Every structure is written in structure tokens, then in C-alpha cells.
Amino acid sequence: MRAEKKREELMDRREFSVQTTLALLAGVTITISDCSGDDDSSPTSPTVTQDVSGTVATNHGHRVTVTAAQLTAANSITLDMRGDATHPHSVSLTAEDVRRIAQRSQVTKDSTNDNGHLHVVTFN
Image 1: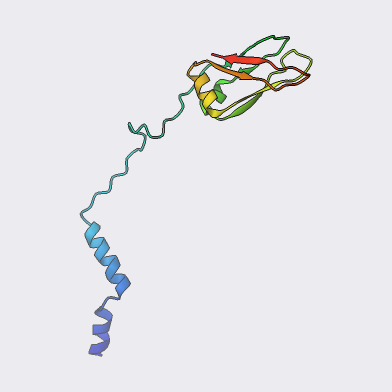
Image 2: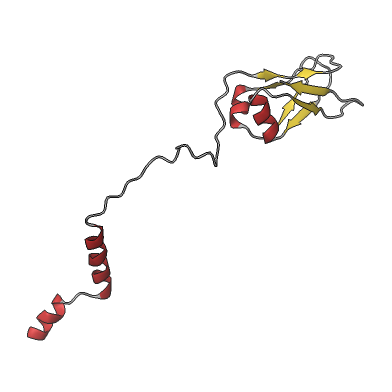
């Protein structure tokens, strides 16, 4: 009987590890803080509140606009610029182009070459 009681009092390795860890952490304070401090390693795009329209060279009814939501998202996009014209064109912008437009820097791109011609589009 005495051997059985002694055996019950002994801890197995797992229980010993758990109890040791709990004892070590008993006086430890764990603080979780917000990660949005002053670290500039992963800048976020500012929220943009106004759409930006492009100027279409040699225009005959085309219109193109980057929306405020697209500028805030700062992803690459392809924009339809048909507007009132009788044929389509589109202009593709990289994510960097979109970021520059959001910062009101000038970006100039060629449209697709539809109907035997293209247009130069300038955003600023």
C-alpha cells in the first residue's frame, strides 16, 4: 500500500514541466501592444477623399478617372476610358503609379492602341 501511495505522489515528466512553467510564469507580466507605432518599415497608404481625372491627349470624347477608393487601395488597375467616344481604350496603372497619383505626382501613360490609334493620358 505504501508503495502505491508513493507512486501517486510522484509527478510524471509532463506534469512536472507544466508545474515548472506555471511557477516560472507566476511573477511574469505579459504586455501586448499595438504594432502601429512609428515603424516605417511597412507604410500604409493614406485615405484619399477625391477622385483624380486624367487628361487625355488628342481627345475625342474619352474620359478616365481613378476613384478615391482605388487611390487608397494603391493596387495596380486597368481603367476603361471610353467616356463618350464611339470606341474603347483602356489605360493600365501599376501600384506605384497609383501611389504617385494619390500623392498628386504627375504620371503619364499610353492607352491601349484601339482603332489604329492610342492616347497619352496624364494624371496629376
